[in-house]
Length: 118
Image (cartoon, rainbow, N blue to C red; front, side, top):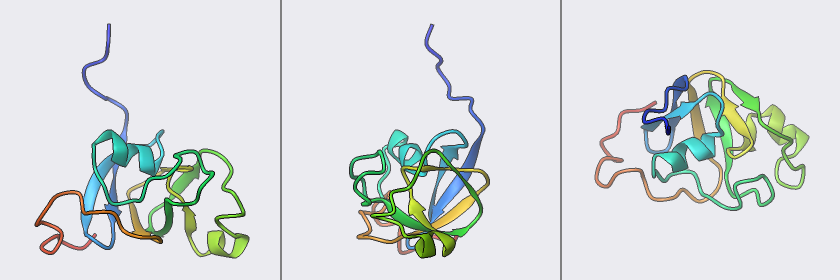
């Protein structure tokens, strides 16, 4: 029998540039949480750490590594500064992030300008 409701613990993830927030399970990547809800914001590439398209900076909150981050895309210095790949980390607490690359269209039309800050 399929589970009708996703009962995993979730925390809020906020995209600083738009002020928009989505709920992400603590055992799924920041990117998959966004995709599961059909949202946009973080650019999507290969979804497994190989392309670097989903590079973000964690502004606030903490994340847990789901796998190694390629040094071709995130240097040691960048990682120390909070940079990571959204496909390779899960939120350990509520997270505010900044998209490092080209920002995809906001989650919902017309609301980005009026969105409250994270």
